[in-house]
Length: 91
Image (cartoon, rainbow, N blue to C red; front, side, top):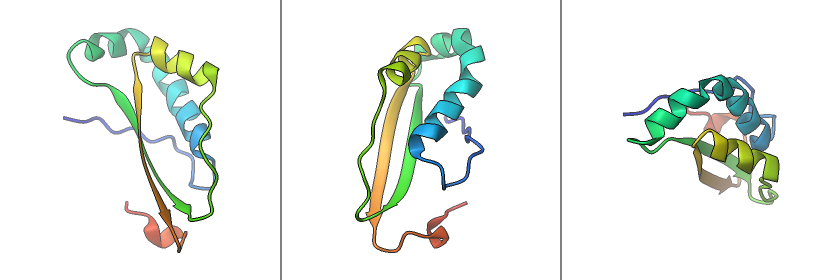
């Protein structure tokens, strides 16, 4: 079972902005997420394709606190590729 929600941002935004946007959408559902997390693993799955020379990821204390409050985990699948372009979009 899965529920898919996209940030609505395009791929020119840093992944941190996508996560922040998703949390803005999910914050009003805090009670429902807490109930779900009792029986299911509830997380934000981040998949990113980055140029081989890309920088690392920074997760702020504020972001960690929001994730905790919403009973959410993060899962990252990052791919570092030579040809970073829209041909990698799998919609």
